[in-house]
Length: 87
Image (cartoon, rainbow, N blue to C red; front, top):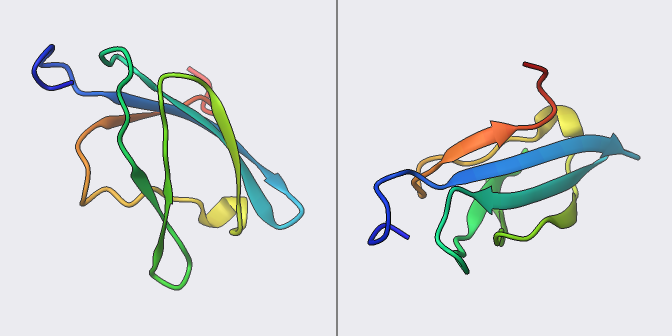
């Protein structure tokens, strides 16, 4: 990825609450074909759960309430794009 463009990869995502859990939909944008990079999600107890985005849309149920959903940002480089937010 970083050899082909100076642009940061963008993790596009949306989420919603589902029975006390979070239904997450995500994919990489602005990347080279086949780009893969694990992204950690912060858990309420301070641990992390890794998701494995690709350039195709994926879905995953996370065992945390939607209001506590948050990406851990210290261990990876890129931008995020929350598709839930209206422009």
